[in-house]
Each structure stands twice: as structure tokens, then as C-alpha cells.
Image 1 (cartoon, rainbow, N blue to C red):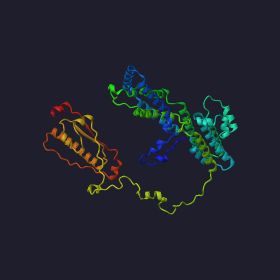
Image 2: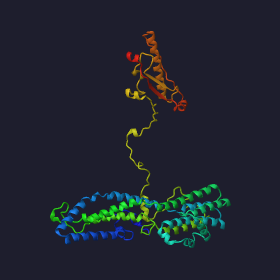
Image 3: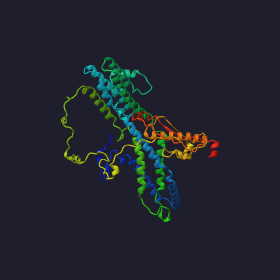
Image 4: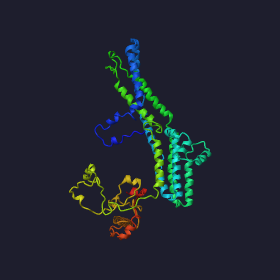
Length: 499
């Protein structure tokens, strides 16, 4: 029987766990008291022999052995090995519980999609759920000692009503070397297909929903079987067990209180009861006993799963859902809050104080705002500036930016330009349009500079550059197409010499 103490720890209070320390059933005392008594008895016996029976030379030898053993006791990595093992066992224990097949989802689908209030429809629904429960009984009978004792033979399953005589004959006639828990599920699929042909299942979508829920149910049965088949590797369990028992075996000698007159290190006091050694045994050995208890939760320990109660619950609620509750609905009527804009259920006097607490509307809902004008003024969002792409070498030589005039970089005397601004003919936003016009101005000035150098003219020719303005619709349409890139071309040898 599962020991539940959830109600006693519902509210945290002073010494809230103290009441739990005095329980016996399901406690660590009941699980460990025999090992604890054996350890305390052996320690007391060695202590009495050392103090009363040994000669002086024998006591000297015992003391040297005790000091040597105590020095190397901590080399056993007990905390690491035992902690990791118990964590693995606890995770496995909870996963096994979640793998127990429950028919709740399947019975809802059967009740909703297998139609017919006549005797035939009732037989179909009850038989489908009986097959599902029969499969879970077969798999639990294979892994749980409690269920095995309840149903020792297949005849007991027939007498319990999970299987008929004809079904038992069919079951026995199918030979297999492996567990046959899946046979009732195969009967389920064939019967569901027959109900579809008869029109009890209206369409293929409903049949597919039945098959999906059945596969989920079958997967849990299969996972439960594999958890029972594949255990935690035996070598790991052996390592942990040997580590714990060997540690406390050497503690029987190494933790003895020695003669204080011989001035041994850490032996200035003499006690008869090794309090901290006993506490250490209680913690570590208790840790191992916890893993021993829950490594297979389908046994008969205090905290093992109540599989027989689960079987009773599953068959009862599943048949109730698909038979008595099928199309047995209460009349639909207006609810109590039909004419109210907001529903407010009443409180009892014990919970009336909760109505005084305001509802949680967000952590920043009641945040106090300052009088800073920057937090009160609003403005339009600034459009994104066009991104520039420069070669890797140019990033180290110079920092290109749209805000820097490209004239500052200079122009070579030759025909090749050190900086060339290339972009799409149509700009995506006003800033990009301005940048394009600036590029056009630079290109025109470059061409004019070449003409002046060739004709030896001293008067520069200035041409005004006017940026083109696009309509708002064209800017929005081509905003994602335009890009501006800067490409740096290396100067030739002649240009470098002239510069």
C-alpha cells in the first residue's frame, strides 16, 4: 500500500516534517533497522575486545591497523557513486509509473466514435474496452508479483471476466515463444475495423483516431515490459553495494576510539558510542536501501505501486464510460451566470480573505513612472540606415561610413579610382536616395577632374547635383531591392608612385 503524506505537507510551517519522523510504516527505520543493529553490535563487540581481551602487544597492533585503515577510508568515492546511482534509480522509478497503461483517453474516444444505443453497439464498446483492459492485465501479470498472485493462471483471468472461454481457446491456439500481451490489442483493431464496415464508426477519421489512441496504449504496455526486461546493469548495482558495505566494514576498525595516553592524532577523547559514525551509516546505508526498494516498484514493499487497485479502477471506469454514460447526458440549460457580464463564484468564510487580494496583472503594472520628459514624449521611429559591405582588407585600412565624405579619401591621377560607389538605380528610402545622389556627384566630379587634367584647364567645372525623389509607393515597393556596397580596388604601380 502506497504511503501518502501529501496533506500533512500542504502548508510549510515550523517543524513541519517533525510529525513525519515518528511514522513507522514506510519509514527508513522499518527499512534499515536490521542492518543498523548488526553494525552497532559488531562495533560494540570489537570495542569490548580491544579494551578488555587483548594484550598490550595485541592492542598495539590493533591500534596501528586502525590508524592505517582510517587514513585510507576516504579514498572510497562513496558519495559520488551512491548519489549518481540513486538519482538514476529514482528517474527510472518515475518513468515506470508514467508507463502504466491507463484507459482514460481510449475510453473517451471509443464512447464518442462507436455509435449505437442498441445491444450491438453496447456489445462493441464494452468488448473493445475489455480487450484493452485484458492486455494491461496480461502485462502487469508478467511484471508485478501482486498481480501474479491475484491471477496465477489464465483460468483466474477468465473467472474474473476479462476473457471468455472462446477467447482463451483462441489465445492458447496462437503459439509464440514471447509474451502474448499484444493479442487482445490485435483483437481490438479487427473489431474496430468490423465496426467501421457496419457503420458504427462513421468515417475513416474516427477509425484513425481509435487506432492512434490504441497505439499509445500499446506503447505503454510495451515500455512497461521493456523496463522489466532491461534492468540497470548488474555491474553498477554490484559496485555500489560493494562500495557501501566495504566502507562500513573498514569503519568497524578504523573508527574505534584508541588509547588517549598514547597521544595518537585525532584520538584525544574516548567515547563509547560513535555518534557520527552511526549517523553516517544511517545516511549512506539508508540511501542504498531507498534504491533497493524503488529499483523495482512492482513488488510488495510499502511504497510499491498498487497494481491490483489500478486494475480494479481501470475496468470499472472504462466500462462505465462506454456503456452507462454513452449518450446519457444531463439536459443542457442556462448556467447561473447567464445574465452576468463577469462570473464570480462565491467564497466561504474560510477563503473570504482571498477576495481582498488584487489580481496579478503583471510585474510592471504598478511601476511608478518618473516625471522625466523623455519618458512622456513620443516620436516616429528612425528608419534603418543602409548597411555597407566592405572587403576585409578595407575594414582594417579605413573605417567606411556613409557620414564621411568620400572626397576625403582622395583621387588618384590615373584612370582607376580608389573608391567606387556602386548601388541600385532606384533607392529604397530617403537616406539611400541622398547617398545615391552623392555617389553621382562624386562620379561626375571624377570625370570632370580627368578632363581638366587632360586639357590642362585650371578652372573647375561645377555642376549641381540634385538627388532624385521617389514617390512613397515606389520607395515601399523597392525597399528590399536596393543595396549600397563600397568596393576598394588596389592602385596600380604608377598611381602609387604619383601619389
